[in-house]
Image (cartoon, rainbow, N blue to C red; front, side, top):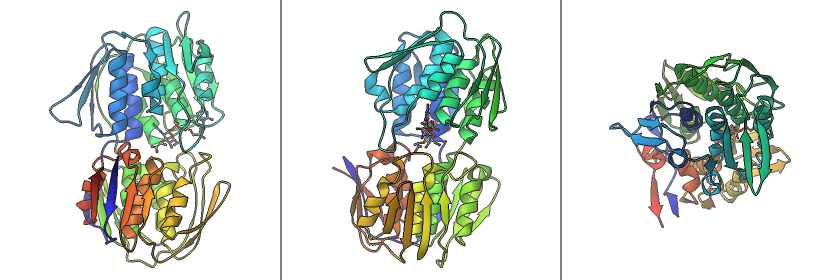
Length: 420
Ligand code: EPZ
């Protein structure tokens, strides 16, 4: 296992470029299964989650080839040679479940290991299955696997999502693109990653309208073809670096961003008094201290993203005064808090609410990453803490941040990665 060692906190200065979005590229890779011709995906981030998704597609029959530019990967599935997404892969990557929709659409049968829960919550898939059933698939469960089969073509239908689930919206979209007639997804997720997937599907020949709104309409087509697609930038990686600048009282220019995707994060961080300036595809964050405490509530997009909750909790722990963080999306996404308390943070949890009494400075300590964003939050706290911090179990961080230590080091951070 590897760990990060941060010898001391220093203000970060300079510029950093974020990669393609993990949560856009994972469904897009799955969607490449919809065609037997080749797709070329650009701006693919170098992440463990992406490697697992590529392994899964290879297991289903896809020829996956990295191009000369390592962030460009081609996917060509001339024939589906296996209809099962095995437990050992699905267990490592929940997003593997996103192959269900495209496999159902392409072959009419798919068997996927039930994705377990994960540290942040039980993460059911009932809304995904509700959508597949509405399209005419027969769903059976047993021995830890879910099977979906269609006896004839899938037929478009109107589907209301009880919750605007990102994954369910994506899976149903992919299942519906070659169904007979029109599918309407109501109370759909609006996230930018949904829009990017819809763009890719339309470039493949689908007819998807309304992505980015609560209602998405899909007109079934008879076939899909491979294409070239560039993945949108990762708004959560960008937001993480924004907070790195804020928490260390530094000044950082974050490049390769879509400012519009960061609107809820920018709005909230500006409430603390943080100086944030936007360009066409870059954001600069500058802090000279004296920030004010704020209240944050996570909500589906365009609300404040749950994937930024742990990071902003670290930041508010270092702003004197009382802040409040409410996590409405996942039932157990406060595991970073016990580790922050080991660094001197004063935080009380009451159900889904965390009340933070911020301090001028945390103290370095040995802490443990419990999940992807919690790990990132602990790195941010260590970058600002007095004294040395060690973060262990950083394989969680490798899932969603490529070259994290290198990027931070290029901004002046005193961080090294130590392989045990
Ligand atoms: C996606 O997960 C992201 N992952 C998550 O990012 C992100 O936190 C989440 O969306 C919310 O924005 C990827 O895109 C790969 P959901 P997903 O379905 O699709 C409930 C990260 O750190 N729900 O929108 O699994 C569920 O329990 C990761 O990058 C059902 O009840 O999220 C949860 O409470 C973490 N039934 C809520 O909806 C279902 O069938 C949100 O889940 C599906 C979901």
